[in-house]
Amino acid sequence: MGKRLSLCLGAFLLGLGLFISPKGASAHDMEDNWANNDTIGYGYETDGGYVLAIQRMLKDTPWGYSAVDGYWGSKTYNGVVNFQRNEGIAADGIVGPVTWEEFEDYRVYVGYLGSTQYYEWNYNLTDSYPATYLRDACYGWYIDVTTNNSEDYWHVDHDFERLTYMCL
Amino acid sequence: MKKKNLIIGGIVGAALAVVISGFVSQEKATSANSYQNTKVTEDTKIKVERFNGIAQDKLSFKAKKPTVLPEDVKELEPKTVVVTQGAKKLTVVKQAWVDKDADKKLKYQRKELLIIQSDDDGTVKPMNVLSKGEKIQVAGVDAWLIKRGEHDPIQLIFWKDGRYFNVRGMNIKADKLIKIAESLQ
Image (cartoon, rainbow over all chains, first blue to last red; front, side):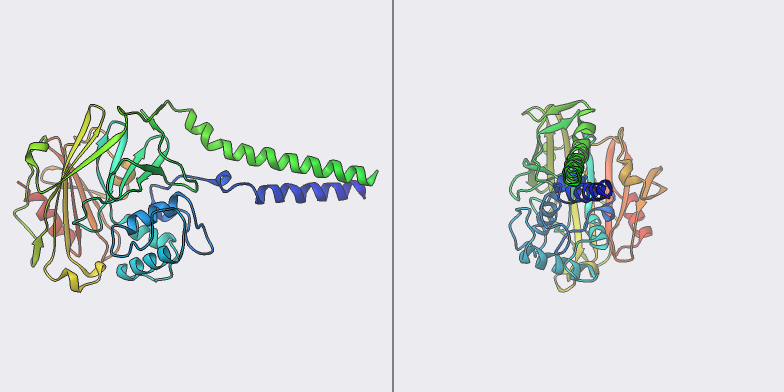
């Protein structure tokens, strides 16, 4: 009886430990096929690199209401709703597979540089500083988060991680 | 005795949880470190310079323009982009055309044409992108036609004469896009 109880308690604590382990424990990079990315929005992920990427892309639309700070709030939600409406899809404010595909439609490969694929997110065709993506062979996707230069790249996954290493 | 078992079981369970979550969180770092990585320095940092118009003096090639265009579109100001990483350089020209009444339409209803050309010679191709497309022939070379829904942009990607081309159209049919690509001169 005592052994059974201790086993139960151990299993419970094991489960609890895994449940409360940091988000980074299950982090993974942005996918090449964006439809397979994590779902972002209320009730799903609400901070981190994916949110940064969405906010940065919204800055290239007329609906980039919020700062590019990586935290999901009502302004980012409203921006996504307006983006969805203009894409002719369900405007639910959740960035799931369908909305990620709509975002990916404007991702354009521009060329190869050293060990890095260079992409631009061309939504507003007159934008002087479109969101630019790098795809590094080791770490995956990075996006520049500023709208006036393109040197501040952040890794797109759950975490806030600035580009500090490159794969050569 | 029972109390002791409970305490031991609890400690073992908690320790296992810590070990497993630690192992999972280390997995990414371990796999990344298995590559040869280099810290970003002035030599490896990617810099992007942007210019309005076709800045021919910044380009390593002469920009081509299409002689075939969709109907009822207006040309937007072209952009030149110079991307450098140490001694390596990528020069890019972007030209775009949109509906004359684009402002009155929702994005997915607009007609748009975007042509990107760069001095990427295609030695290394982005197979993660091309694998989504259908391989066809355009102007005597291999090309990849990438399309999804009816109102979603279609991309036509190819390399010719040591140069990369991406002809992307929205609400422009694929056969028209091919004609536009073949008219580049």
